[in-house]
Length: 195
Length: 291
Image (cartoon, rainbow over all chains, first blue to last red; front, top):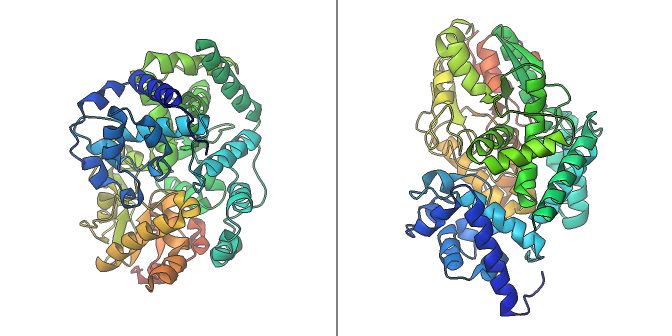
């Protein structure tokens, strides 16, 4: 994780996040959050978070986006969508978390203890390589890179799954796997062009 | 009845039994499933961390193929695939910018998609197209006395809510009531999160969630938990020993894909439902069903 050197950088981050949120369909609803806390109360992992989703919205509206992006909160979101379906203001909080993840990765502001970005990276690698996620490859790469202890912790489980034929070593390669690279390349080029 | 069918990546590995039992159940009900040609990973939640549009366009490639095959519906079994694919449709419909970008991306690979292929969860098809009456008429081995905990998980009806309530879904309850099972209709944890991918990235958090779910199922007197998502199923089932070690518990609750248990009620041979692939043995569930 890099440190933001100046308040100018922090302001730029806030400007960009605000722009991104407002361009999301329904993004302007963040302005009518009444801080009821239904999101945090519904969140299955809020007890582990630096800030719960309610506080994330409050801090963002107070211009503290740099601290929001660096919080562990966004990496503890499991995409369960409870906050989203319960928010009385209709704020798509899960989508906000995704947007924050994108900003954190882009500006290299991920807390170093978070393993989620590595998982995401290997997942996408696997999909682009084969056209489908190869679960064994994903788990192996993740464990090798991020958590040497995991294979030992989960050895018993892994052996049972393997014996039951639930961890096939071979991957399925789809015919159109190159299309996925092209789709991503096209969207990346469009994004660059828009700037 | 015939549907185009999207198995999803887990159906080739940890969730094989879901795919196998789905095909067996649908065959028994006289519903033909035709696998989507050259389908790709839906992208799950991963692409949302890179570029939102990628996730929609990657998912939409599948819908473009469905359209090309002349179909206007796609049957999906995994909750996460279902939500990702359906979300691509919804956001394309809601936002012209998304629609245009996805069109452009698909155009770059010589494909086109008009946004009109309906993504259907298999439970939606069973309840609304096959219908409970018709389903019930095929039940040959009633699950009388079997205490079933219906576990929906997160992305079954959240956030889409297309065929069941977002907060209090009941379709799985009703399906198993039609089999004569003793369904735990007040199973409090039925839509709680299993921790998903966090089982690998933050196992402490995921194990705690699984512990709460298993506790709730045990308190309800569950003989078996049924799931509708490969990630839910593996977390609840395969990590039970890990939960026990962490929390000093002694859970040994069979967990099945709901299609496996439904298949048993329809009189399908357990071998055709891949019941031997379960980690917590389901022999006692099979044995408990009156012949």
